[in-house]
Image 1 (cartoon, one colour):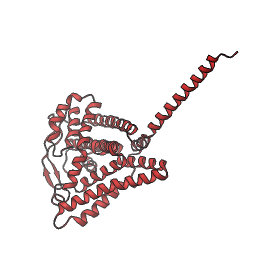
Image 2 (cartoon, one colour):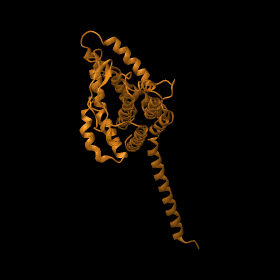
Image 3 (cartoon, rainbow, N blue to C red):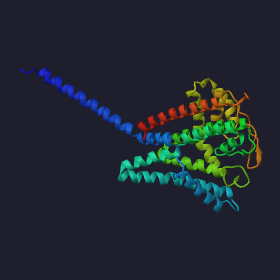
Image 4 (spheres, rainbow, N blue to C red):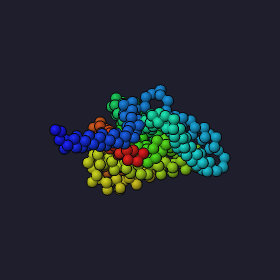
Length: 337
């Protein structure tokens, strides 16, 4: 005769199995929400910015250039530049949001693919590291070659830079652009999704094109520059903290607090001072921009020679900080988006 308890045991087993399957299905659903970001992030790590591929930032640049040539004349240049910046940033956000909403309505998978592609184009982690490596390799061959190579990634006049200044410029740019090219885009993705990430890239492009304090852009680009300052305020400080955290140097936060605000930019000094603290070196000083010397305060006090080892340490820090931020964004995507 069959034992009733055996049947109850079987049903209990089936119920437990079904409950576990539902739990893992639910977890898989939540994890899937982070997949578009992960896909775009991994694509950037694998491919960087392949030469010859179309890039939305190039399109941003053409629109900004057209607007600048049309509006940067006559009276009220600051107002016209500010209105242009606001329209482009808000327009970029709204256009991206509408495209994703429309794609999601008809074909959700296509919307996810678009998010992945957008993330890929908004990140610049691998390309930045590749360029900095190329600078160190070039300057090891000759000073002139190093000057040409570093000129690809810095805005200063490189024609008279010494090998020491070339290496310093590359390391400064590596730290600053870890914030601008990786941590900040990820931050805005975590906060506002792909539309926020794309809008940040527009802000960043505006600043890189018209945010200069020279005769041509001083009035017209001042509001665009302020937008960039605001958009990078938290990410720059977060970048510095991540750099110190992944290198085991959180005890050097006082160094960052001391030298970070000394930079001419309200934000760039923080990741640069974090790297200076980690490497125990000195950045900054006077450099030529558009034919005129620009005085910048020193970040750090130990004036020493930079080596390839410094570059390798800095790249490791960049990679680890990017990994940490990427995992944070994945977690936020699972919980919120």
